[in-house]
Image (cartoon, rainbow, N blue to C red; front, side, top):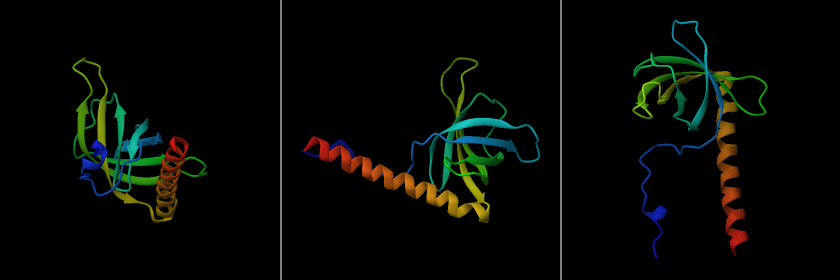
Amino acid sequence: MVKIREKLVERRSFIRLSEPIKISYTFLGNDKLYTVISKDISAHGLRFQTAENSITEGNILEMKLDIPNVPNPVHAKGKVMWKKKLSLEDKAPFDVGSEFTEIEEDNKNTFLKFLCDLIYNLQEETIDAKSKKA
């Protein structure tokens, strides 16, 4: 029997990881600070939810990513690639997809190590789950 998961084809260049990360961002050239929690993240970008209606495709975001167990936030810039309203209600929040356009040089290793650790821990969890079933 073929499992459904084995039939799925990943179209993305990088795996998405469902890891909640606190993100503080401003629009390029604007001082108002917004804080959200990521829904998923990858080496290419991230997705978050916001009630902020003024965010649109093409906006450039200046972001600070609060990586767990890291004393200083990772500074990055991202471009809003898409925005989708989550329901038809007037005040419903939006899902927003942002592509990283720049990660500060000092922060790249920290960010990539964080992603690698998540992937490594994901593999360990999968192995542990399989061994408990056996």
